[in-house]
Length: 278
Image (cartoon, rainbow, N blue to C red; front, side, top):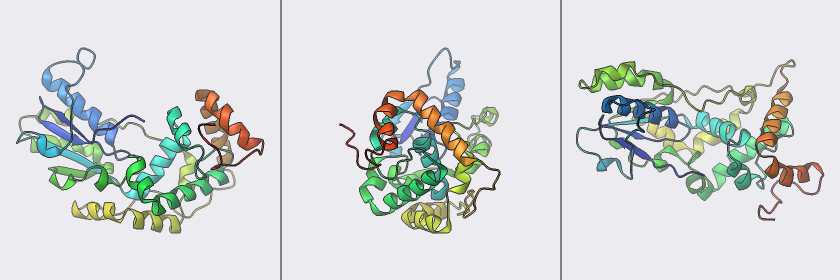
């Protein structure tokens, strides 16, 4: 998986951002890049943005506006599961996790829901898996430990308001209010509305209690926007959506799927019992 530097510094516009995975990271970074390009007087086609990776936010010059977004951990974990594990946008997600008991092999909606519960339990019980293994579910305060040094921290739900907020704080850049904040990497799957139950919500919130404390620190509501404890209506064919995801996965990564997933179907073994190297 590609390495993600926690910060980006844009020297022409004087903006730095925290790249918080599954919390508006791509949207915020691309917006800041568009501002940088406009400030430099070049179009996106003519010149790539002047993005500098930095390890610490205190490396940026004085006067830099430091921006970050946060997301409620329940929303964030459901989004990570849907966007990275159900969709598996790159083959490395399958190679890395297909042998795990909680990895969704997309055989049925009930299997998806069961494996989501296993994924949350793994996050809750395995410190290294939660804090080190993958930045897409690493606690936000672990991924960017100096968040309290930022000038403007908002919830991901307020991304659309951020251009106007930046223009208000930067009188030298009033035009940034008109640079659109485009939502990137949005995963629209009907089945995610039926993954959560009250026990899983409580487990996620206790596991990511430090992230909830960050929300409190910045005056961000603890409310999240997922449905909890409901079953799909009879006319809602979630298995059809699962089959479509499975077909997409096979189309994109058929060599990987043919090598591993068919062995599950043949009953030769089960999830969690495959040696990825074998």
